Length: 195
Image (tube, rainbow, N blue to C red):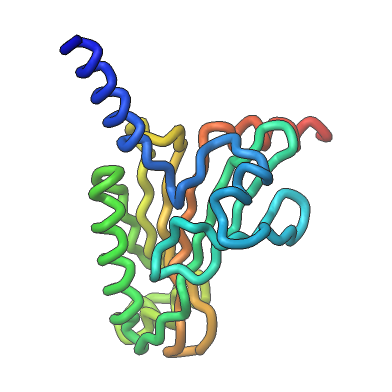
């Protein structure tokens, strides 16, 4: 009797450990995703649907799921509300670091990229042009999980990136969180068959 009880407890614990992002799992159909949402998913184009998951995070305003007819759910993107920031990107960097640290509690330490890539223009590499260079595409601030180790929840990778939504030298930016499931490569292979 005691062994049966332990097996049942272990089964319950493993169910809770498998906590898929926003309550969504790899391979889910649109119908299954609908069951995890506050309202019907809205088709944007091709495989992309906008959703409002029941299990959401207050930082994010928009959620998009990528659902292939054959393989089901293969990618999730969550986009934050606009974050007003100064020319140094102070507020956006603070939000990025806070979220990165929270995600690291689930997936471990990420590979962080914080660099300026336009070597021909050292002038805009200065801290006071941080926001401007991010807008221009010369600067990147991102974190990636799964680059050197396996992730739970059937995920291939998780990535967090900073983007600019409006402004020039200062303005608003957003955080974009990407979840790529292991079946993403199957979808890409299917799309590449046309070549």
